[in-house]
View 1 (tube, rainbow, N blue to C red):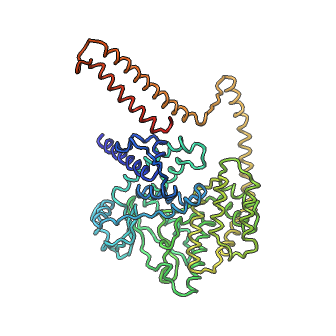
View 2: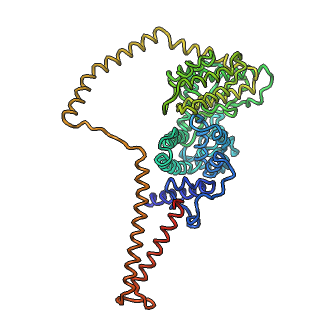
View 3: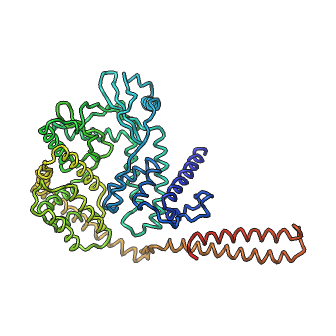
Length: 555
């Protein structure tokens, strides 16, 4: 019971923090929309939630500031949204990309405490050394270098103390706020706040379980087992738990420290080929391949680290992406539109001819250009802008892929500006499409389709009989849903409540006036106590009613 009370208090306290931050940055109208006015501090309740003076910053900037003030969980939500140009305008994306996690490192005593909690004993039983200076520090975890008792060099990622309970509280509040926003503000919008929060919740919960990252690393290790130029760190499973991850330490240098031009060009080719293999062959790719997650070993091999964020693509999605890629190269706008629509979800009626014209404009800008002259990141961003303008909702894995591809292009362009990424990627694309149209594959797909048709036809008589039986027994019902009626009912509730209070105030005034004319009962300064009390209650209720009407702005 005490735990439940503590949890409830924590929620209320956090709600108040969120409300105050929203009001501070000019989003008081959201507080009213979500019916959170009762959480506004008493000192601010008599004021309008939004000042008549327009905010200095744009809405995008103010959203970024809100997320920054609300802490790590909200910052990570903003970082997720910054990868969704199919949902948000470019100005919002550019602002959310500025979100950075600035958290002080954990004290080494806390790190040791966490390690010993996870291992069930002194860390000296497993480590001869554990560096007190972190290699990296983030909002969820912290990384330290260590040496096992067998002499193996390792890195240890340790989860911050109490981070799980803080994230859990924020996720529950986010879900409640998202549900309110979806019902009252985003009823017919492309953006679904509930879907976004659910997706984010799944991602951050996976990030909180370090065993998942260890399994991802093992899978990458297996996929690149035959690649002599690419290495992946092995997890130390006996020293890995939900809140602690121990992995092989890979010595090396960062990309910016590479020397000769030929070395940089060779490494750029290795990075490009490895990413093409991840996306088009394996369907399992690194979701955050920035320079900090890439190490160059002393023998000039590529080593990948940090597999907390990965993407997975089905065979169907990989083939659609490959066809889209080829369509753009061949300047086939009609085919490109078809493949884009196959990847995404069309949320409303679109004009396919207009969509094709926009693709033609995109392709025409690069007509006659060689592959080496094409900026892949620019094309991808323009294509995503087109998807946003036509309200084509793309799968999150595809968006993650485009973000990773743009990151890889940036990494490679710094190493070898003249390298033709698209030319390196073409053989992988053609191999994927070649496998797609292989006779054996076509025969197998044809047989599967025939089997599915036979199963549908076989079950059709039973389905028809069931419908006819329901009609005959008068059990067939139609369910109709009136969109937007909840908002009308909510407004009617407010109107009826105000009318009820008005009637009560009127009755109190009339009743108190009659009592004032009576000589019965106790008196106060020669006035009947009941009459005076009635007047006081009527004044309080009337004052509250006037304030609520003035605050609403509808009078």
